[in-house]
Amino acid sequence: MRMSKENNSSITIRLARSQEYLKFHEVCDNDLPHPLSLEERLEQRRQEFAQIDQGQIIAYFAEVEGEVEGSVQLCLTDKTPSEGRIHALVVRRVHRRKGIGAKLMDAVEEEACRCGYKRLWLTVHSDNEAAGQLYRKRGYTAIEIDHSADGDTTLEMEKAL
Image 1 (cartoon, rainbow, N blue to C red):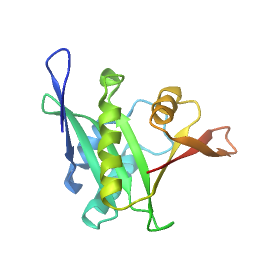
Image 2 (tube, one colour):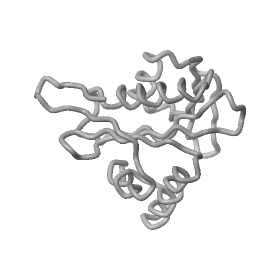
Image 3 (cartoon, rainbow, N blue to C red):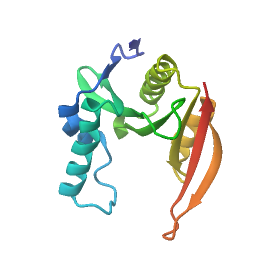
């Protein structure tokens, strides 16, 4: 998939490979507070991406001028065989609001349809207004609110395909 931009750059969406977990790590907001150490996060991301080879996730990268600027994962859930979970949609800060997130969501939703899924679901932090707006614009609706003990609230959202 390619999309021309006004500044003549393009966004290319491609499948990620398991050994590319460091590229995913580089796109994440690593300067934000996180309960895990850097080493623990790297190991967690390595383990997540190892699931590609096990057929448990499908991961996509968005590249701009050959550099990975965003990523998303489609997790093949065990809830029911007719649904999938979207995980870890991230776009590098300098490239947000330029259509990368939408293109990544297009890729994941197209793959979910090819897999025969009837429903997709995801979770989003309730204070992440930009992400919530993107998901609502794409037809996702909130189905559950989770209030954790530390005050962090997340929404579970779903979309019928």
